[in-house]
Each structure stands twice: as structure tokens, then as C-alpha cells.
Length: 283
Image (cartoon, rainbow, N blue to C red; front, side):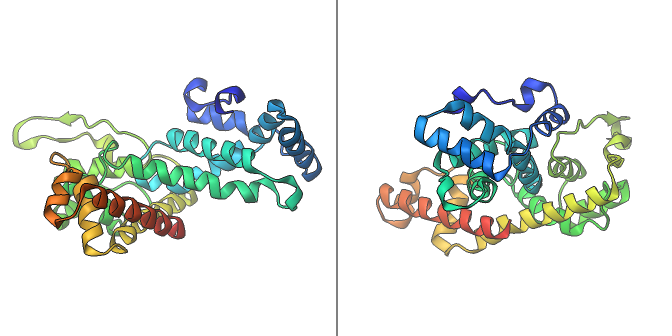
């Protein structure tokens, strides 16, 4: 079903802005049209009907994806994963229950995005080193305003957390949802980051405040998820997921806890499920 629908994706349209404009052009279906299309797909396997249902709800995925920008993942990737959740929702939607598709789909969209975030902690290089984890969980609470950090604020955060100024700037850029080039200016003791790293992004103040609040909530969600685990489960998750170079194997942890590798796998799986629930509740 995923391949057959041939949905627009941000990369194919050249930019996220072009994608958002494109999906906002698809009409919102009335409840009668939605029911009629859902029945055609359920009873006749009509993929065109399914495609219309999905296209009319792509804007919902875009809106939901904005709530997960605080994890340092590109919004385009979050949208594509959310679209998979939307298609799963369309496949399982029962038009006879009297519930609108948007209400039913929210769960599936969020679940797919949550899974994507958990899979990509290491790939995005967020919360993998000790310094990055410290920044990931504390940077937003240390910011005093909604805009980008000034040079003085970067110095203060770096000194407070015991990390490099470059790490502070990089993590702030990841929270904003995009990569930022770090261009050294000068040499020797006078070398410092390009001033462009400290400028605001020009977005509306209300949007900046909303993004900051969302990012803080998501970071807190991850922290709460780890804190919800018992010591053994947390040790396994940290050893398997939050190390940079020496990730532990199932057999390493089996030897440490004197249990089988299969038992470690079961504990890890249960811990991940619990963390997804905590993150979902915090979202």
C-alpha cells in the first residue's frame, strides 16, 4: 500500500516549505466523503480511495511533526515517518464506528514518530557522548529567552555544564531542527565561531516561544523515560544505546548480570516499550 499510493515527499519537492505548501492544497474531506472513500477501500480494495484519504490528512502529519522538533531530527524525516503511521491508520480505519479518521490516525502517526526517534538516538549523534547528553537534557532550561544564544550566553552555558562552546552551538542548532555550519574565524587564541551562529533565525517571536516550549517538553520526556526504568533496565538501555564507541552486546550484559542473552533482550525490549509509553504521555 505504501508504494502504491505514490505520496509527495519533502525531498522530492526540493524543500520542506514547498512540501507544506503542496499538502495544504489537498482539500479537507467532509465526513460523508470520508466515509464513502473508507468504504470503497475496505470493501473493494480501491487504492485511489485510500490515496485520497491519505492526501487529505498529510497536513495533520506536518502539524504533529512540529511537536517533535526538540529531538534534533530533521522535520522532513519526522514527516515521512508520520506519513507511514497515517497510511497504517487508513488501512485499519473502520468507517462504521462514527469516528473521524483524524482522531483515529493521531495515535498511529505519533507511534511511528516515537519509534523513529528511539531508533535514531545514535544516528543523529544526540545524547551519545557525556557532553551531548548533558546538553541535551539541560540546554533549553538554561536558555533565558526564545531567540538564539548570544556569545556571552554560550560562554555561560559551556562553563556551567563543563562542555565546549562548539558543543553548545551544535546542540542548539540540532534543537532548531537543522544543521548549522561552524566556520572558525581567526587563528590561535583568537579563534572563535562565526557570528552567524549567534544570530536569531528571523522567525516570529510566537513561533520561537512555541518551539522552545515544545523542545523543552520533549527533552523532559526523554529524561523522564530513562528515570522511569529500574536500575538494571536503565543500565542495559544506556549500555546498548547511549554509548559512543563501546556499545555493549547482549552477551556482554548477560555476563554482567549472570543471565542469558535472551533474557537481556527481553528486558531491553520491555524497557523500550515502557519508555515509548512515557514519551507518548509527555508529548
